[in-house]
Length: 177
Length: 230
Image (tube, rainbow over all chains, first blue to last red; front, side):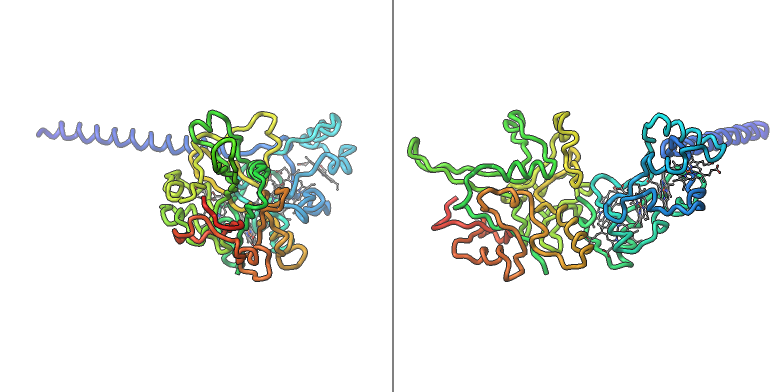
């Protein structure tokens, strides 16, 4: 075999290799972008938990159900109107909120945390009886300046690991129904 | 320990089907339709079998309400290849729908034919959308379902008892069919509690169980005067 031919072949294989890597790279990027787009949640108003925590609002002021119910609940406009009757600042997000307040239409908050329909989860059981902090499951959402793009995932593994540690029931139908 | 069980007094049953309706409403079981009936695809976790005796017009009808027998030795559990159906520590034969792969071994191995396969996507009339029970999931097509002794009621009852800082009482937890029965033919409770109504009735001389000879040890007992001939 001539050396020039060898060289050609080498260049060719390098090119093929380069092409393959490049396309692989693109595919990976595409997957990442698609995942971010599909799993993300955008709230109608970018709510800022931190500002409100600094203004001495406790979780219960806005999520009013968890002491007695399975769900925690989202605040209605009535809660917000107590302070936002008149503009408090210059933020665009507050302006959006005030549009809702003026029209009286409730904000349609998107759900971030969700277990599948067949799983029984009760906030009262965990927060009141189990004395577990919100943070344990929701991370630092209570102090974060903007809604998370995607929630911390609650997997069955996480539920069961804590139940193991805390000697709570881990029978399948304690949760599934 | 607790072993949940049921006693059904056949001498009190009038065949009114209230238990069947209550069960369907409580557990989000779709309606039966004539088409499903013809194809033998009806799902009814509680069903009343009618046994006709004699020749017309001298006939006598007897009724046999049948929920899952919640066997202590359940044949359906033995054949499940994925652990989707199992006997729970409180004696309930459970079905984890998300785990079920729809092989139907269990439906075929149930000697009472009381497990049901979802051949079709469950559907309800539009008007029913807001009337489904949020405490019970809607099953997917392709999974097996069955009577759970309204176990979701137990999930909530346990939490309620914890909030009130007391032990679960027997009357805290009662399935929909039992609650509905207008003639009190159905009794529910803890078979391991010697003072419970069910455990007393289960020891009655009128008591028997279906296909007892198979050794499935059902936790649903029947009562009737005289000899049972099914």
